[in-house]
Image 1 (cartoon, helix red, strand yellow):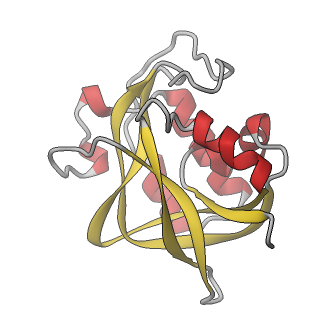
Image 2 (cartoon, one colour; image 1 turned 135 degrees about the vertical axis):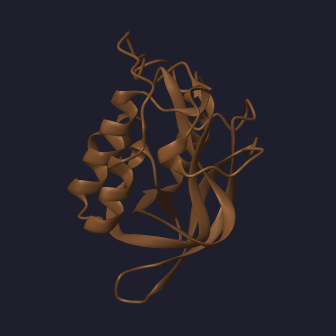
Image 3 (cartoon, one colour; image 1 turned 90 degrees about the vertical axis):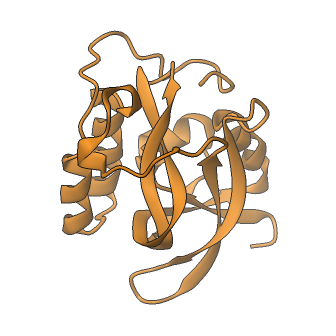
Length: 176
């Protein structure tokens, strides 16, 4: 695996057709659990018409996602997609546990800004809600990859912002 790296996707990139738009070398390796982080939404994304997902270090919370193996040539495209140069997200390395107990060190992206307050996702204020299309994409990816049903139920109760306008999911990579 010398010229490849592992990436943990917890948002729209859980969906195969979504990650392959900019990262064609991505191969699904497994699903996994990121411990002591919570899923949250904060920064508005022009691409999605609502807030995009982030992870926030939080004791006793967990985030499920998909572990992809990518060729090094896609590290730059992934960084660009996540807006690293524009300080939207920053990459970090985390340990992710697979359902069979294996621990894999994976690249993940966290938004540069963290929410000031921790609110239960089902109670998200309207200015922090994702669009219906974004939540639908996350849910499709979770179901496609057989993320545990309990976590899918958790994702299903996240309120959206009712945005029904055009989403720019095919904007150039560096647009967020």
